[in-house]
Length: 162
Image (cartoon, rainbow, N blue to C red; front, top):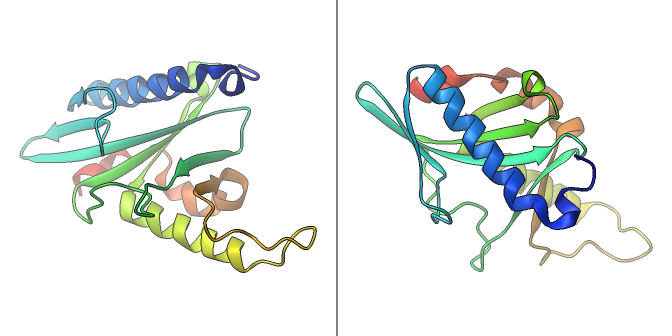
């Protein structure tokens, strides 16, 4: 997969992540449906018994260490963020299907991590005497930096129904 994102295949990688997440849910007996392309806030709706959750999917390929987001015009990272029934699955897309990693966590928690990490980056000493730009729209979640925080969420599909 080397260089696929830079060669314009980012959409395909994102789509693959969404299909893998839907497949994992279906495999577990959960009714899961992909939303229409470019739906504004969520990628998958899933229902189990009487509970329905909204699932966002963010995929990175194994060659990269970070999942990335762009803030919206209003500065928000996630549209329609909710503390209830709103989850994100971070997918590490690997060449071998057996090595795929899924981190299932509440979107509100992920939002807090991204906001705190960005604030720390802005306040960090500048590189080459150029201060970090508060208007930078990119947000990153670095796997090496967040390995410990992410560990409890690895394949934690049950969190969706608690």
